[in-house]
Image 1 (cartoon, helix red, strand yellow):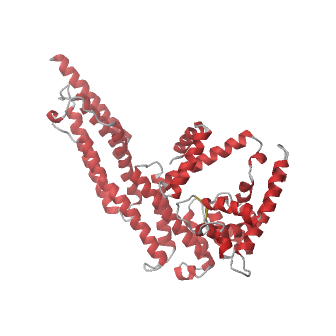
Image 2 (cartoon, one colour):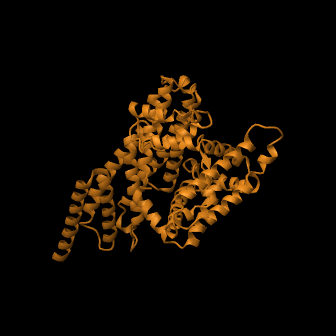
Image 3 (cartoon, one colour):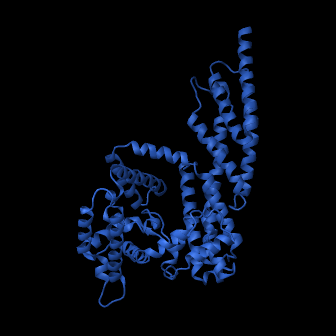
Length: 467
């Protein structure tokens, strides 16, 4: 969605009663758990959580709004993904937080949790920010120790104790959360050293980021993906994270890149491109084109970047994954592109007057949807070659231009002799054709055809009065 659309959604959600907001959050969380509507549910949940947190902040001073679980997990917030979304290295499922918090209060560190709850309750309502931060650090240290004791090496069978935490996915995330909590200070240092935004990622920026990442505890196989995830979140073009791996390997050969610990950067880039492709397919399926151009550009640039900056073999795991992403995008785009001319013809087809029933009208919603689809084809033209849709896109766009230009001229002429019973319908067809011209030929041509239509209608009315 565009920024304006997101702001409108947020304004609408903010107007709902708290009970309705809570009900919506529960329903969308359940939808994510079922794997349904992940793109929509993730977006709405994100906005709802921002509204709820802001409301809590407005109602009371910040220290009093933080419960213990939020204080504990604030360090893993940058790595959280919603339930139902595919997970990659360097990410943690948000749905795992609740069972892990319950385990800490029940088995992991029940005495300490109770002690911290009492300490938070005793804090003054104002001027306690420093005390809350100190409490958060203590809580995170206790949780890190409890998780380490459960997941670390030691005697005895720990499988039964681990099973008490939750499902296998939760246990997998328990290891990740424990690792992140154990190096929370190093992550804080990394955040301070990194630029706020990485709009370009050339050699100077790569050197700066490499230096910031040079913290021993962040260089382990378990923690490096999380550190790289922090970097990715600062990047305007996330796929460029592969440049770190290429720099470290001093080669663009995928075998040499994969042999370094930073080879995981390529895995992260491919996964994130696959996620954008899935969002794009869902948007196309639903007819939502607000963010289509941005997502298509991100995919185009990412696919081209990986193909040109890495020497990938077609039969390697990375090569096959990139080929699969390109094929998925191509199939989704081509199917939708092929459907556009038929929708345009259905609206602009000049049926005989006897076949037009009285009161017939053009659906304005269908017209705007078709305008969005024509713009969709036009956007695809800019990225067609890299996404293997060059031929179908150019052919369809050319056909649309020829058909719309010819049909618009014919419809304008038909206004001069249109029977009064169908004149309204013909005028609506002309208006739809002019909207299509605006996308295909620009505002000047659309204005020209609009004036021609006005002249045709005026000439017809004068002719009628004269007779």
